[in-house]
Image (cartoon, rainbow, N blue to C red; front, top):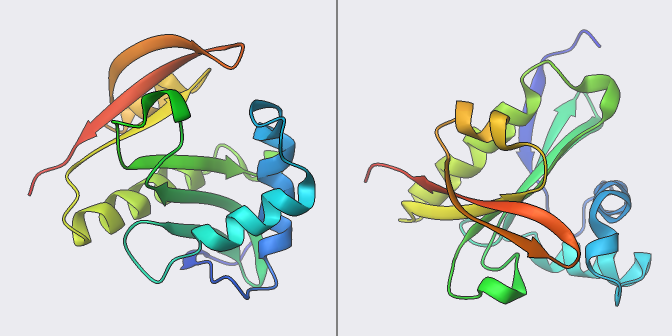
Amino acid sequence: MNQPITIVRLSPDSDHVATVASWTFAEWGHLNPGYAADTWREALRRECGDGGVPSVFVAMEGDQPVGTAALLSEDMDSRRELTPWLASVFVLPEWRGQGIASTLVRRVEQEATDCGVHRFYLFTPDQQALYRRLGWRDHEELSYRGEEVTIMLRQLKA
């Protein structure tokens, strides 16, 4: 744990797709009961864009992935009018508390700004405090697929 953390864009043919997919499936697969691990992995592969929406980023310590975040056109099928989304922010438990999630969020925000997006969303059941510290505002509270969540909004300067 002594190499600097770097944030890299995940490509569809990366060796890390399977790892990132396994993390996000374990964390959020219950919200998508129609997906199996292999279909989840293929969906992630399709989200690995060249830039803009969609894009997936990975926090790396050397050649080891330790976290991820994405910029997606859709993340909540009951709110399709809201787009795009910060999604899948995840850091391995042993790497938490070091600012990696914040760095990933900032990288996604920069990606959004670079492609002309200045307003976007996320939803979270339990990380509202983190996102509020990063400048996100509460937009709506609702029950989504059996889980109480807050949709949050980020308005960036043009």
